[in-house]
Image (cartoon, rainbow, N blue to C red; front, side, top):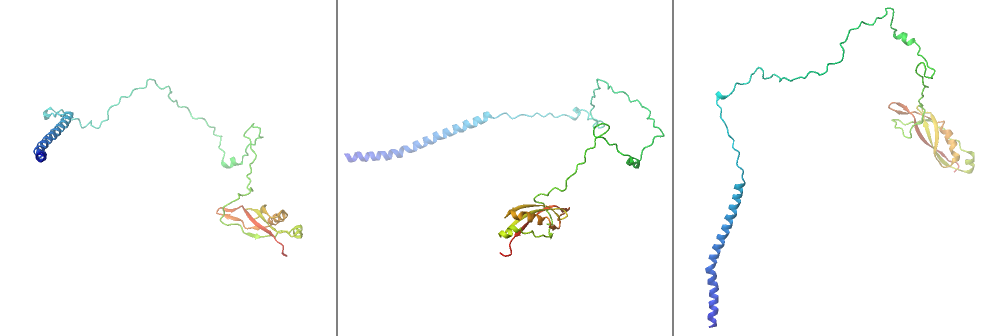
Length: 242
């Protein structure tokens, strides 16, 4: 009895599934197709209803007899007339009246350039009466020292050099050292001023300056001519016995 029940339940499940699955598949396909066509119909219906009517253009064909006369060829390039309003107020400027020429004395003559150059100009006393005041001449100092750096095409070279005197006190004390002197060389190559820029001992400064002022150089040259420059020279003090 138990074996018969189990067999029937197994047969019922497989046979029932084979029998009803085709029915449910067709139902599902029909329902899906219905939803598909319903959605497509709604979409195309919205598109159709949303379209605007295309504008219609009406064309009227005229006969040759209905056309008017053509425009004139002679007045085709004529400029249109522009209305110009007249001035509301008349100009107040009077009409020019001719006047006679100025009478010139026949005895009057015009001075020549030579006569004008020989006339002395009036000199004022500077108080402001009787003419313009003459200011004092302004002198431009061309002897100002040059800048620390001056571009040159040819540097100055010494022609004459003088050895500074060794101070007696430094010689007895056995002092040695070096003094760097900056020399202002003018456009003629002559020293105009000497300045100590560095020194090992102050006792050597003045003899070095005295010797530097006796040096002679060739002038420094630039494309426009000679220029004034500064030249630095070291003066060494060294005893021969050491």
